[in-house]
Length: 437
Ligand SMILES: C=CC1=C(C)c2cc3[nH]c(cc4nc(cc5[nH]c(cc1n2)c(C)c5CCC(=O)O)C(CCC(=O)O)=C4C)c(C)c3C=C
Ligand SMILES: [Fe+2]
Image (cartoon, helix red, strand yellow):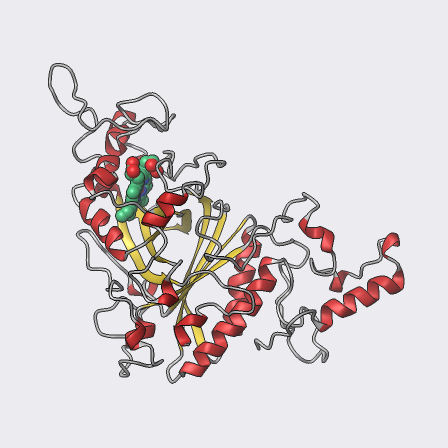
């Protein structure tokens, strides 16, 4: 697996030849060869799935890209005994495949191998769906640099005896410390950690799932899927052009996010700068937290209580001290008579606000999830929280500040991971290339 043909693939050439032979005007593009590559109009038709996000650029796609509606997030572990050259080969193969996938093309030689006794390179379920604004964002776990040590959250894997399995220890950024334990954490190590992470976001869940499935096949013999999570209904806007979505508690989520248009805010708070080794500049740190929400209990709480917990109104998403969603909260405002603060001292927006966190900000890009239900009639539902920040310390600071949060009675963090997301991938480069030079 994983052998990628640079440039036009054999399958695309066959498609073009075939189309010419039978006449495009007659609508004769053969089904099996009708990839987006064989149909250049697929990117511009305006039909569902036609939008494409460039894979290469200054920063990896999938961070400031307007948040798509669907997520498949995956953590991978390197196989025992995998070498540095296995890792480099994997990253090259993933880069080639990801570029094709984000264009809506099949991976490798597509769905039809020369020999029908062989499995196809591409599993096929996204053929004909178009690119679907797919973005694929790659991150490197701390264990890639220092091996799997006892105490690191690590996808239920055994610790690795080698403290420098890929010769990367000296390239570990100073700030890349493991996340500490937080009060109320109930982390499941089979949904935590990972040597590598891949965030696939798209307009269509089948496109996101297809991407992870095929990247996982390509990894065979070198790395394996440790755990993965599906998400739906983005819980953040990352562009002013987007409406603010709602989380499973019914509140608008993502109002006060760092947006794509705020280039100064991104440079200050999201993109890693000169403080880090060159391979990470222009990148970011990705934190993922799987947060279970006890929605049945929440649904029995009064509207007043729900609004007190967040410090915002449910319908408008306005701060309790304002009228419009984007009004700035006034944390000093007090109720006449009692003198009590209008926004509770333990309201989520007060504790998460930069004013409580030495001005630190993060770009949130999470998704709702429902993993079925339990035997007590309760949904296994919650928020797959994803944030990007210039330093892991920003997340640590805000999460510590949330210790007295009123929201904590209704949520539990059950999964966790931290990855360094290298900067953008230039022409002809593979993801993370500068780390190996
Ligand atoms: C450590 C970071 C954060 C975690 C974990 C977190 C969990 C969490 N949040 C909501 C719902 C809302 N969060 C809102 C605002 C908000 N949350 C964080 C950080 C974490 N949230 C920040 C930095 C902010 C912005 C604060 C500000 O600058 O005003 C809001 C309000 C609307 C908005 O601005 O997005 C909601 C609603 C849930 C349900 C949740 C865990 C399940
Ligand atoms: Fe929040």
